[in-house]
Amino acid sequence: MEQAVNAAINLDTVRAPQAARLVTGHLDALAPAVSSLRGSAGTLARWGTVLAQKLAAGQRLLVAGNGGSAAEAQHLTAELVGRFDGERGAYSAISLHAETSAFSAISNDYGYDQSFARQVRAHGREGDVLLLLSTSGRSPNLLQAAQAARQAGLATWALVGQGPTRLSDLCDESVEIQGPSANVQECHLVAIHAICRVFDAAIAAHEREASKGAWQ
Image (cartoon, rainbow, N blue to C red; front, side, top):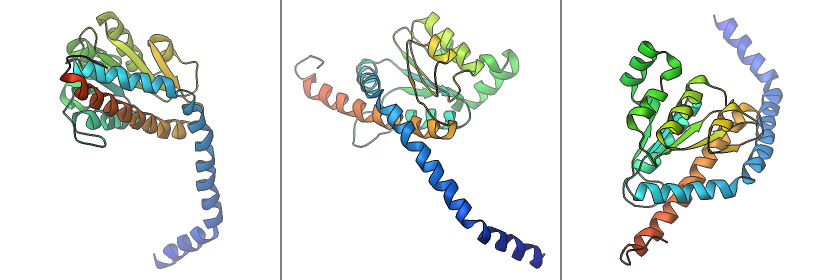
């Protein structure tokens, strides 16, 4: 056993330069993905402002994704229900995969393709927003969710990878990021934080104008 451990340590030592190149290569690939995201700054700014208007008026954000994108969806809803940078009120945002009993029951009874769509029909109201995250833009359960949301009168937005994607086609608006899947997912988190930054600024402006009875 000791010999095997020593062999593994020696192998790791030999491969250290290669490992470092893998890290720098990953970071190098991130730069063009971030540059691609920068081209959608106007869209992200509009999403943040629209969300502030809608959620301040009592409407709701629904968010969905699979795997790592599910984690990012839950990250966003945590920022809105909790807080991002500064103190503010709580706003309604639901990450659809996080309702695990409903998610698994729907998947079992109706098929995984309906895991989000049925929840959209249950929770979504006309004027709400559905945000879908997918690096591929072709996950069947997200495509079904987009269709259900449009039928229910929700605004539909997508954060995806390299376009064109079927999910982008089904949504009202999308942000497409050019790059490898892992870097796209990292940029989705950057996009989420950018949306939250605009959301907080718009909410602060709304609170300043509230005494005048007007939304600015």
